Length: 253
Image (cartoon, rainbow, N blue to C red):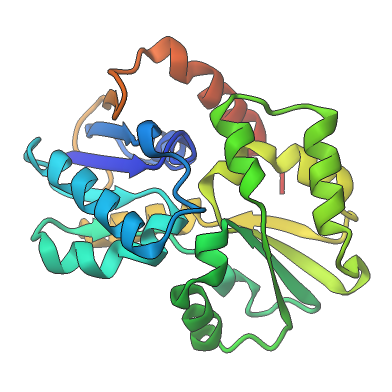
């Protein structure tokens, strides 16, 4: 079983990191389009063009499934990708469905492209949330993650300046609508009231992958991983700090 995962950069490692724990015997290919990161501030047409190029490149590896580990790319391009390629393509979307029973309001944080895209508004309408949903774009977080800056006063100030614009007393749930944001769960937790839960779409996406594979997640004994970037081949030493960070962040909710 060969599964390709791609993102505009290193955010999608949050999905790969969890997939490595839930699958076995899979050949994973992780492709980071670092040359064109970030996607979240680009136009829809540009994102579609980039995603078509990424997918075409990955199909050359004779893969069994492609996972778009990027909410922005999913929002802008998944329809075009599925109509252009025969390989199964799984996308990511903000885990709003998990907020269907939230007692208070919901705050969704994502990139500008996701926040302003039709797919998110359609999802909110489809889920028919009883709670009020607030949307907030946090484009700088992607830049912080790509630069491997996870703990700084600048990050906390940025988050406070943006999130404290809302009346948090009415909010019960924070939805992380960008895989890059998973690196900052501790920063979100530090500035949010304890009553606000933090969720992301990683596990939901992996569940969808397993469903698409007929409920099977065990294909052998060991996984293998190949890391590729649009700028160069990636060494595991460049990836390890991100994966270690994610192992810590996965315990925060």
